[in-house]
Every structure is written in structure tokens, then in C-alpha cells.
Length: 162
Image 1 (tube, rainbow, N blue to C red):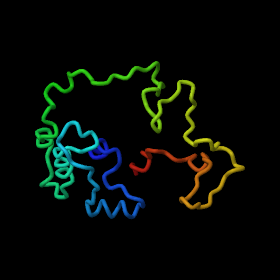
Image 2 (cartoon, rainbow, N blue to C red):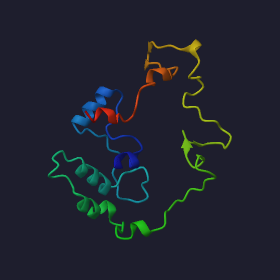
Image 3 (cartoon, rainbow, N blue to C red):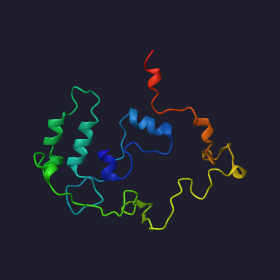
Image 4 (cartoon, rainbow, N blue to C red):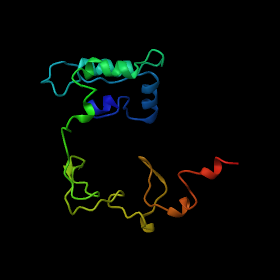
């Protein structure tokens, strides 16, 4: 996650799922330019790279422990004892618990009257355009049939007890 926070893409990113899995298995990461110059905003610090590499140590016995992570030079300016009492750097303002104006969508901030549709312009209940075939980019999901999930429970406690 640290790599993704700094770089903006997952560390094992690639064009296909198979290549991503291969990158994970072989710990193959495309590193950005490394620089300790604070003016190089498009670069990763050597401290960040070092911490990420140490966190990716395969042998859990050799991997950094919490206290070692806190003492790593990447966190040298963090006072862990007072961290919870420090004021937040950014405090978003919102009008209600449903207000999403503080979050950007594809580089632009939501307009207050913009309606969110997770299906894009496609109406999820529009059966006329339904196409369950595999297209060039894989399976096309064009509608949602809630009847398929009628008896589905996220937690099935009844299965845990005999």
C-alpha cells in the first residue's frame, strides 16, 4: 500500500492478470526514479524504497516488526507518542454525512447536483441492451439481476453451528 500511496499505481501492475501474478511471485516491481532531493516530487525517496523492500521480505521471521517500522528512517519525522494528539493537516468540510464533494472522480470534483451512477450511462435494469456475451475486453456486465442473490447472506452464522 505504501508503494501505491507514493507512486499512484499498485507495485506489481501489468497488462494482464497472469503478468501481475508473475510479478508478485517474483517480487518484480517497476520502481520510479529514486531521489532524496525534496524538490523531486516525481521521485521516490531511498528511505521509502528501503522500507517497502524490507516489508516485502518473504521470511516472516526476518520481516520488520512494528517497532522496527516505527524506527525506520522513512518515519524519522513522526513522533509516535503524540501522533494521535496532533491536529490533522487536512480537515474536510462537509454539509452532511452523504456529502462527497471532498472526493475527486477522475481528476474532477463532483458538482453538487451531479448524480452518481455506478453503471455509467447504462441503466442496470434495461433488459433491451442486456448482453451476457464475452466482448473483446472480457465479459460485459450490462444489467444487475438481484433475484440471483435473493438468499445470499454476507455472513451465514447458521453454517458455523451444527
